[in-house]
Length: 98
Image (cartoon, rainbow, N blue to C red):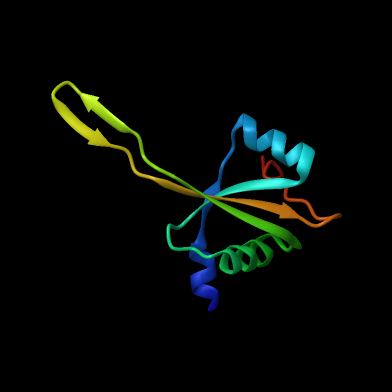
């Protein structure tokens, strides 16, 4: 896995009520990832970017919703999310810059 590929795997963190509770209780952080990302790639990307030790990676594929706008049918894009569990003593702080 080259460094350029690892830099493109993570699209951004998912900040929601559910992800905040998971971070507080289970040391889990949620990231949007590219659709073809594999678990080892996600693990190495998080370890490289945030300088932490990853304990476990779980991946969820979420289908896009079907929507109607009058007579026009449409569909939202699907999302692939990764739930990252960090090892004891590791932490990611997204609010450090603000």
